[in-house]
Amino acid sequence: HTARDGHLDFYWISHGGERVYQGELKYGERNTRFISSYLGHTFELVDPASGELVRRHTVDYDHIIAAGLPPSIVEEHPRSRANQIRSTHENEWFRHKKVQRTFSPLGFTKGRLPDDLFASMGAY
Image 1: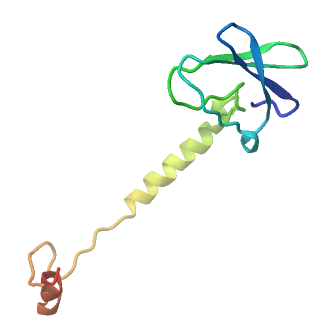
Image 2: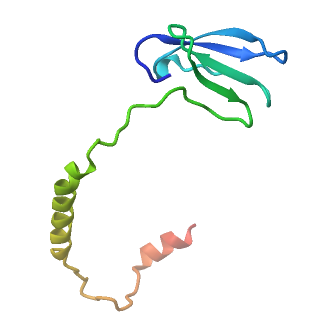
Image 3: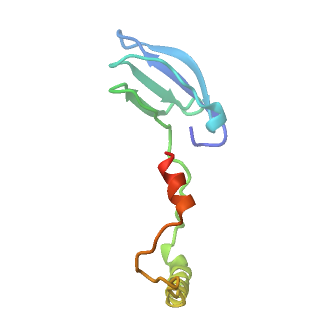
C-alpha cells in the first residue's frame, strides 16, 4: 500500500461472492503481508474511509503484488538533468583520452614462466 496515511481493508472473496475480512494493509515494506493462497482466489483492497475499491486481484500464478502507485523516482521534468548528463558524458570522454597503454619489456611477445610458478600451477 503506497499511501502513507491510513490503511486499506483486505478481503478474500469467497466462492459465493461474499467479502471475508482478512485484516488491514498499512503503508510501507515493514507492513508487507504475505499470504498463502490458491489459483483462482480473488482478493480486494478497499479504502475504508471512502469505500472505494482500490484493487481487485485474482491469483493467476505465484507472485507479489502492490496496492497503489509507488512514488516516482523519475523527476517530473527529465530535461532538468540534461546538463548534468551532457557534462558527465564530456568528462568521461575527456578521461578516456588520457588512458595510456603500457607494456612490459617483453611487450606482447611470449616469455618463459619461472620454474617455481609453473610447478605451483602443476600442483592443481
